[in-house]
Amino acid sequence: MVFCVQVVDSRIDGSVTMGNRGMEELIPLVNKLQDAFSTIGQSYNLDLPQIAVVGGQSAGKSSVLENFVGRDFLPRGSGIVTRRPLVLQLVSAIEYAEFLHCRGKLFLDFQEVRQEIEAETTRLTGPNKGLSPVPINLRVYSPHVLNLTLVDLPGITKVPVGDQPADIEYQVRDMIMQFICRENCLVLAVTPANTDLANSDALKLAKDVDPQGQRTIGVITKLDLMDEGTDARHILENRLLPLRRGYIGLVNRSQKDIDGKKGIEAALAAERRFFLTHPAYRHMADRMGTPHLQKVLNQQLTNHIRDSLPAFRSRLQGQLLALDKEVEDYKHFKAHDPERKTKALLLLIQKFSADFEKHIEGSGHLVDTEELSGGARINRIFHERFPFELVKMEFDERELRREISYAIRNIHGIRTGLFTPDQAFEAIVKKQIVKLKGPCVKCVDMVIQELIATVRQCTAMLGSFPRLREETEKIVTTHIRERESHAKEQVLLLIDVQVAYINTNHEDFIGFANAQHRSTHTNKKRLAGNQVIRKGWLTINNISIMKGGAKEYWFILTAESLSCPGTCCTAGFIFTWGPRSKSIPV
Image (cartoon, rainbow, N blue to C red):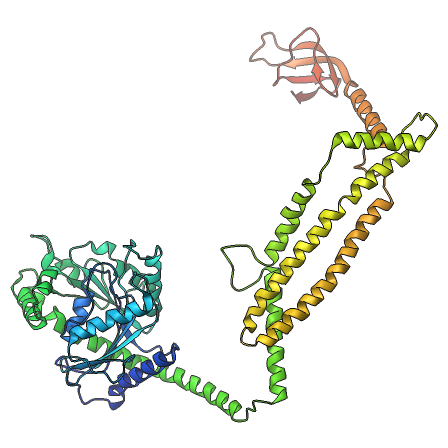
């Protein structure tokens, strides 16, 4: 669960201080923007300074939020309770609540608020445990609240429960990261004290976006549930995992307290007594508890807003200038201006052309990891489907021998031939080459089908202009069909060229001349293998093995071996011969 908090300089008791008037009006302005964009269903790009509260499902974040409001109004139960973002706008006034989706209806009973949140969540996400990014806007007026805005998001989870999607962990993480990855966002990492701080999901996420711990505030909850004889003093004193903004300890209501209808005021009083009486925390009691947390958040965020305002103002001015320029262009806009229509048409066609080229060349900005598409499918046709079609060609050796026999006899006629005629060979080979036309033409057909499918995929961007999309598909498909006939003609022509002349002198052709050449080359190599290269007397020197110094042996060196008749030549000896006493290692 994540709360994104945007605060105005105000006191802990809920009354707003009379300070900078612009700061006091910032939150109401953001509330109006949130309502406006939620109504039209559009997101906004206002990166205001904020505080995001991050933690697991059982970290006690709901209790923290309800302590701020002073009422029990959030849904509770097992698994993920918050399945849609809840934009909670708190206003210091008389107590009531209202929703944006049913504006004008006032909720005085906060149990009805909880029921409405559950009903509105189920309306969009269904009865299962799925998530939806569409927010629920709730505004709460109360004399006990600060003027601030909170966005409540789902808590961190690891294992899907019940009907939850298998990738629920990644959905929740993505939703949280959309908030805490912003540089203007302070991270309030909530971790229960009865778990290992080193394995805190909240601190892990905070460290991913804030490695130096410059914008992370630690909150340790459930200090009263730690094992007897243990405490979190070393954590709260910022000695274990130090953060620049430190840690604050809290004691929330237990489930037993909630079931027993224990009020929030009584819970805050019990929290105060716990810190004043506990021996490990009494020296830091003034820096612990929910009231101190509200004060720290108020001070930290107020300073953060003050420091961020110059850059924020500059960014707004830049956006305003861009909008003014766009408005100026639309002042002279004529809906039926042919020049504007032509320009818009050209831009759409150029984008279609660029997308088609990217799909074929494989340089698209979106890479499909589920299946092959575009150029990759065409590549598979050439390297997998086409070779497969060639292998599928039927070849009956008995039938081929019969055809060869008939061809030879028909060419000889009444004569009895002594040699195999070339005409018979060419007739049989040409008949086999012609069989390649079928797979080649089928390969062209498959490529054409992939090109047409790619065209339809790229024209999906023209869905807002049905007639333009239809005409574009028609023109491009017609052009592809025209080139199809030309491509088939070229493929068939290439096969006819191969049939027209058979080069029997090619190095890969095993004919009579090539066979004779290979036989001659093999015989020469065999003769060269028996040729004597050198023979004579050989002096062997190896004092460590043979006693008596050097001995002489007769040797014969051929292209294939070195032999020493009458003795054994061992590898590693040094042979010397001739008047110059040359030595070679063997």
